[in-house]
Each structure stands twice: as C-alpha cells, then as structure tokens.
Amino acid sequence: MRILGIETSADDTGIALIDAHGSFGGYFKFEVLANLVTTQSELHAKYGGIYPNVAKSEHAKNLPLLLTEVLNEAEKKQKGRTNIDAIAVTMGPGLEPCLWTGITFAQEWAKKWNVPIVPVNHMEGHIIISALAENGGRQIQFPMLSLLISGGHTDLILSRKWMEYEYIGRTRDDAVGEAFDKVARMLGLPYPGGPHISRLAEEARQTDRHRMSVILPRPMLHKKNFDFSFAGLKTAVRRIVEGKGSVTEEFKKLVAQEFEDAVTDVLVDKTSRAIEECGARTLVVGGGVSANTEIRSRLAKACADIGVTLVLPPVELATDNALMIALAGYFRALKREFSNPEQLRAQGNLKLAEGTSSFT
Ligand code: KG4
Ligand code: ZN
Image 1 (spheres, rainbow, N blue to C red):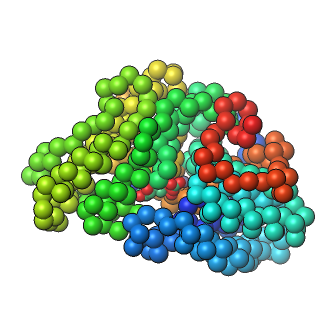
Image 2: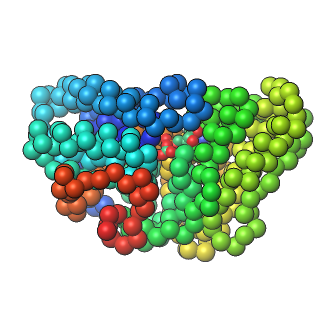
C-alpha cells in the first residue's frame, strides 16, 4: 500500500510517502519513498514559541511545494509509479488552526485522486515511528510502556497489544519540551530551546568544577503516582535567573545542566517505577525530547539495570515528521479506519483512546 502522510500539528510542515506491506507480528516491510519536513523554528524564534496564525499560513504555503517534491522523489525511486492508495493526516492533538491546514489539504487531494483519508493521532505516530523505525518492531515485547516526551506532552502509556493504549501517567501542567523551551527563553537562547539547553548542559558536564552550584527541585519525584509536573521547576529557574541579575555564559551552562539533570532524574525514576509496577518488557520512547542525549543515555542505563528492552527513535525521527503519520496511518488503514472526508475535524486535545481504536 502506498500511503501519503501529512503533518501540520505545530510548526513543522511534513509530507512523506511510504510503500508498506504486511502487519505487526509477522512479515512487515516498508520503504520510505520520500520524507520531507520544512521547519519554521526561525520564524517563531522572535515570539519565543509557536505563533499559531503565522504557523498556519506557513503550512498553507509549504504544503503544495512539499507535495510536488515528494511526488517527484518517489517517482524517481519507483520508476514512474505514481498511484497513491490513501492519505493519512494528523487530526490531533495540536494547534487547531495548523491541524485544519493539513486536513483541508488532505481533503482536496483525496477528492482529486479519489482515495480515502485516514485520520491519525499525532502521539500514536510518535509511538509507532519509535517502535518500528529500526527493524520493523521485531524487538517489541508486550506489555510495552511508552514514554512520550514532546513540546505538548509528557505521558506514560501502557499497551498490552499493538495500537491499544492505557494512560498511566501524564503531566499536570507544562510538558517537558515546553519546560525546556521556556527555560531556554529565560536564558536568552533561541526557540526551540531543547537542543540549546542540551548543548550547554553537555559543555558544563565536561568541566566538573561547576557541579552542584545551582540546585533545582525534582518535582513529584517522591509521589507514588506516575504523573509529572514541570511548572514549579520552570518557576524555580526563573527565580534563580532573576536573582542573579547578569546572566553570564558560565551561569547559563550551570542552569542548563542542573535543569536537564532535574528533568532527567524525574523522567528516569518515574519511568523505571512504572516499568516495574506494570511488568513492562519493552520501553518505547518518543517525541521531540527523546532526541536529548542525556535522557537517552540515562534511560539506557536504567533499562539495562532493570532488564527491559529500550527502543529509542533515530534522533532525526524524534521530532515531528510526516513519516510517523504515514506509518501510523498505514496500520489504521489496514483496520479500514477511514474517515468520511466531509466529517473530518481537527481535534486539538485528541487523546489516544483506551481500547482498540484511537478514535472511538
Ligand atoms: O515532538 P516535537 O517535535 O513536537 C511536538 O509534538 O511538540 O517536540 C518538540 C519539542 C520542543 O519542545 C523541543 O525543544 C524539544 O522537543 N527538543 C528537545 C531536543 N530536541 C527537541 N528537548 C531536549 N533536548 C533535545 N535535544
Ligand atoms: Zn510531536
């Protein structure tokens, strides 16, 4: 099945085309015919976060250009084959004006090509791409725990089979990526801040003398549940930064390291306890923050100690892309979860439904 994926939930415009065969558990194979993303980070940098109306018009501008490029690339790879069997599009969660741009574009092309539309939950896309990118998911054993860490989410989700989800923990306020971005802004670093904090923290780690001179809280660490909270941590950084007056490069590094350590301590501790309590055999990590080197290596150590398989996304596929939407859409299309194009609606707060379908 050749399936086109469209992603416009935040500030990245993505279109991908895959050719996939088979299903979970047995034979499964996919070829990426094209996977293109146009990121708008620079445009949003001056707002310190995503400005929905700017993002929306950028998506509208980028989508037709990306589609032409994707189709050309795919045609070259598959020697003139041009058919598309279905269009997968993100219906949520995300910024509704942005989601609508992708949905409208999908509707337009579904009509032109006379193909069905598969609505996709963005978070399922993150899980599926992490789980399947490396070797088609053959290393996954159930129960599988997913830790989703992105700009809008911090969720722990248990799956007893493919595409079934049970939330066991989530953030009560800010998402972890949002906290990275806000702390970066306080330190005068560009948006999105995660990679910048990570780079500074790495530099600080290489000079040991800086250790321990900034101390931040580890929110919810000793609470027995699996929920997270990062708003207090962000406020603690604000107080320290405002108390300091002049923010030197050395100070930025110290704050970045302590902030990254605090976030990592909480994520690793809660996730390890959740693995043990749920008897999970695999941990899948997804979302933009799973590109973070420190979080990846600390989770790797924790999983090795517990004896569970850790599955991380390739760094370049951790942040938003349309390949993850095409892949998740493929499995939803196998279940014939098509949508009536006229009834398709953006759902900014879409959750992964517990049970067999994401959308019931
Ligand atoms: O999944 P994603 O691309 O978009 C959403 O669905 O939200 O995640 C974006 C988030 C941003 O907050 C960004 O700062 C964060 O992922 N991020 C990182 C790193 N790379 C991206 N956070 C920490 N360390 C990184 N290396
Ligand atoms: Zn995302």
